[in-house]
Image (cartoon, rainbow, N blue to C red; front, side, top):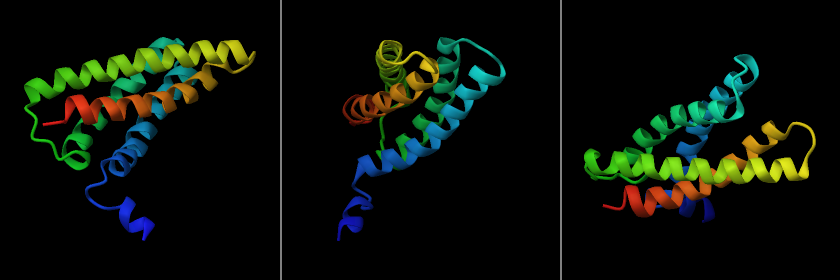
Length: 133
């Protein structure tokens, strides 16, 4: 059955997506609070919001998604490198695309586009670099 396959404990992508729902809700809530309520800049809002979500992501993905035994001294710096690389690549690209295509709500649209790009790049980086041991 399809649902049985996707919910198997060995399917890291499905577990990554479940963890991603949690850290995305935390991160996006933080981003929009900082962007709309606190009136911080796009870059500061997305950076701080994603940093908060990243902390949640590291803890849950290390234990739940990848059941990794990687040493914190090695996995945390790699995790930070992957997160920062994904952040700058995805949100720079989405900001550029959003500004090129849309004339209104470009920051808000860029946040959503960037989040999708960030998710895919982040999974690949965490699976093959950070928690591969």
